[in-house]
Image (tube, rainbow, N blue to C red; front, side, top):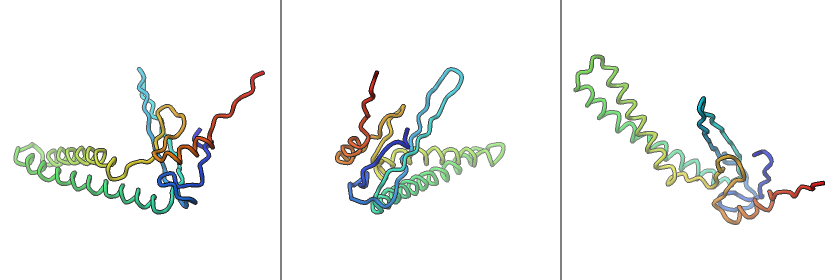
Length: 153
């Protein structure tokens, strides 16, 4: 499905001509059944210019760094608080504090990412076509990937 898309010779994010690199769009969809949960992973390389790729990469690293600092900031007070509780083994307090730090890191990452490294395209659940934030790029993409009418006998 994803391999059949044709892309305009423009940056998918800003619209500059002649994109020189790609940004990988990732999407995970889950279907919960009675016996199992099925996760579908989709990856699509979108054409972008070097400036947009750098901007997205920096935004992602800033998000990771801020989230890591928040996670570490939550770890140390939690560890001190738990150490004062007199737990039977000291490693239990460290493990609980590490879990608290991980939860804070994950929460901060997903809260900050839309502001620091906002995606410029989305893959809708269940497949279909790609939706771009750039309306001109979307128009050209749709023109290149228009459904072909099928002849019925």
